[in-house]
Image 1 (cartoon, helix red, strand yellow):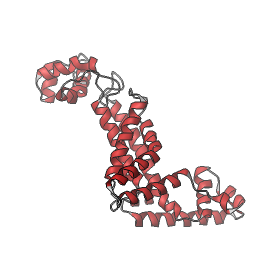
Image 2: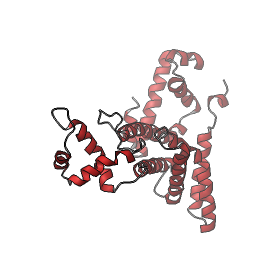
Image 3: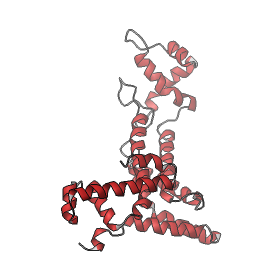
Amino acid sequence: MTTGALHRETPDDVRREKTASLLAEAATCSDERRTQVLDEVVVLNLQVAHAVARRFRNRGVALEDLEQVAACALVRAARKFDVAQERDFLSYAVPTMSGELKRYFRDHGWTVRPPRRIQEIHAKVHHLRRTGSHDGSPMPAADIAAELDVPVSDVLEALEARGCFQPASLDHPVREEGDVTVGDLLTLDDEADREALEARVMLQPVMRQLSERDRRILHLRFAEDCTQQQIGEELGVTQMQVSRLLNRILGQMRDDLTAEAPQGAGLASSLR
């Protein structure tokens, strides 16, 4: 097996390196040139924005709209990115795009927009209406108002506003009889996705410091799910040697992550 077969520069590597180069140029060039350079950064990372948007699809909002929101957030992230403060653009841009998409869901989940105070109590009112009484009958509006410490008129307006509500809204119950909302599920799913993507972003510079052979060992073990015996057969070493190699590689990555930044310590602890 040749050295080139062990590791080739990936499209992610090319995009990251080109992005870093462009942002470094944008920090020192004229305003006119800076606009052009930042446009290149946006185009270069637009597929990442679309990938972030796809994590929010199938929730009642057209994918094209989500991609547009993510793209606009990407533009803002490129303009605000400070090369003196941040090491990697995506570690800054991805949370920015995710946050903007969450705000979009909160602000665009209504077909007819009730007042903000009604939006804020809507889910609580309907939850108490279903579950607040002991005999199984709907809880009276006056009792709901007392429980939430709001005027009865607001409770009545919230009850009437149910027909204005789209399933895409974060406060809409997933099931009529339950109190889990779309927002609960979206937050959980997005949090897991966000952490996975941020972990990948943090691992990339650490992976680049490894030898091609070490990267190949990690790929075989964790991407292709090969056993240590299978890895040993491909590399021409024993299973015991593979075990020692993995321990050394993961130990090196833990040290590099911990030294890289305080937030890397949590990820480093998982590499055991």
